[in-house]
Length: 68
Image (cartoon, rainbow, N blue to C red; front, side, top):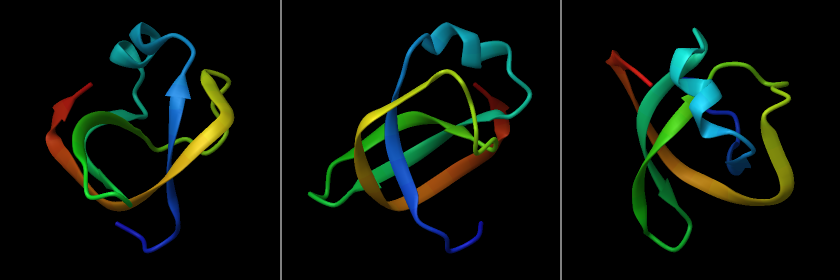
């Protein structure tokens, strides 16, 4: 995985990501140390994102063997 800045954004309709070929499940850690299972998107321009509020992800472990 590249070392670019990763951000946590809210999804407008998470169910859309379940069949998307660009999504994978990931374990994400944010700045406050909290960890959560989230959807990782390989697209950088998805219309399903609400970017009005974001958090910085400090660590992202993508599960290559699982689809969202």
